[in-house]
Length: 179
Image 1 (cartoon, rainbow, N blue to C red):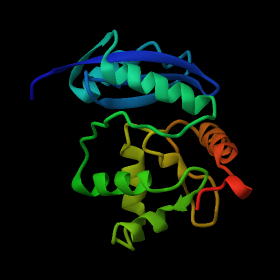
Image 2: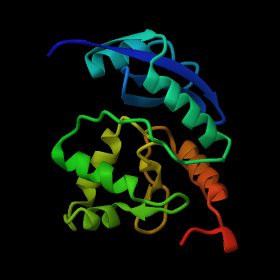
Image 3: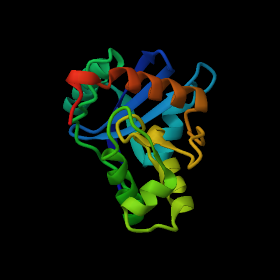
Image 4: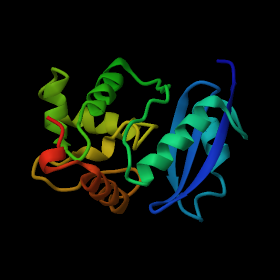
């Protein structure tokens, strides 16, 4: 497999450092870091993505930057940057189903399994969530335990809680709610 060239940018956010990686045209990864784990972030991602990652900019990175700023400001969850995800067919089905979970709402792993026509595959759905390289944009944080508990999130449960609260605050209510 030929190595590809990607661009990276760090974001300081209320939930810590976030690294976004894009090609010229697509978002490849969004990852959470803290000061300790930032040191080897780029080299680790280069191995994971089989890519050379350089600081810089691309059309996709600028688009993500603008959309992410709107998201963090609580003004929009309208991510339109094209996504590059290379999972199995099953993982891609799960990720597509996650994109259908409305802002400010949650679902269980079982709900997602049923949504993709695999009602007994809730453990595999959880594994697909864990394999998601584009959290926030592909909102795996919206998936919770069937009992309503916050379960598993690669970025840490405190970040998951923050994201769910943030999105709950963004959701219109009353007369301004979407139907």
